[in-house]
Length: 521
Picture 1 (tube, rainbow, N blue to C red):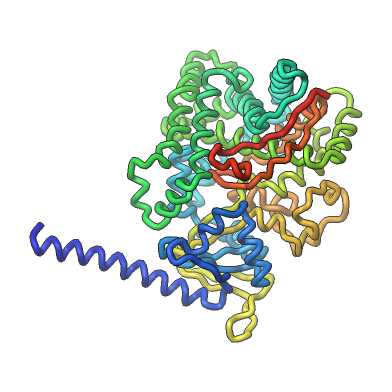
Picture 2 (picture 1 turned 90 degrees about the vertical axis):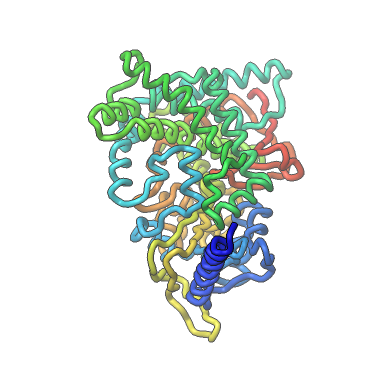
């Protein structure tokens, strides 16, 4: 390389570092009065501590120590400070009023594209987001769910039959990783209701490949290698183009669906052999493609996204529900008494109106164990975040807002917010009765569903939350009627790999698992 090229390359590197540190300097100046916890690592900032602890615990501890619902933490690899906000007014500002000014970060959006495709969770901008949302929304409306009631109960009973057969082989009682079992049913439900597809009770070849690819991705995501990959990608987005294993296993999930079930669904639909209903998701997608409204790639990505988002997150919530019932046998007994007293299979409407304790258990599980335990956004322009709970600045002044620069990374710690003792009192305790009593004042709570942020909030809230709650209740009701669940003594740590993942303390190398002992009732 000649001298001129050396100087050119050196100048480019120098310019990059100048931009890096100038961005950090400006961010630090604007966030000067926002409190920061001590103990940051020179290289990893506070982010390694966040990773090593159970999800949300670090944020909760720091906010308690600093007496603030808005804090900043040191980013890894000399990234500018990260703003973490739990203040309800600031959260509403981001999620509701200015949601399109806070897109996904450079690490989150490419991950969504690799994992699920360029679908509803990936798209940015109000116009495109509303177009995609309007396309799929009718397939997730209450009337569509009512029509799918028998299919949902069928999937739940099939799971119960398979689990009972397994227990019979084990003498009537055995230890299982419950998330692997309930995922079979949730995959079957989205297959039938969304696409008229039979996943064989979550056990046929397509199902095994999809669930296997997801497990491999989740195992990588909760590992030390997964943490390092996220830190590198956030700091150097160009690494998204490299053939790294951590990226490949994410892409394997989408590729498995594209190459298998998605192509089969389109083939069967073209041959009028799909058994789908007029307003199901597949029919709407294929019709939009035939009309030229969406490209084939978008159609395939919608299939990938809804198969995984419609099954995996609900499976995690169900697994945590069963674990909580195992830890709290008095709750399990009371729930069983209620669902056994109802004769037959509750309708869609009765599930929400005639079984109050089932509803309370559902809300409490979703409060404590949100499938998406945090959100990471980046401001697209300068902004001012309003605060309901003012900060005390370094000079002792009261501050009712936080100015931020364009490019500021903002984390909304959903699990931390859902567990705030200032709102819920005994917030870390699993206590379904709180939902049968008077709830906390609205001005203290989030403005999302049921005053929690489990399904996000605003125009980008979870479009399938009614579907998720419906299948959650059907499957939990079915299992509680037929089985008893006992604690194994395993200590569970919450991790994140695109969604909340339970890991057994001391057995982290085994990847996500949630062991419970199951017996025939």
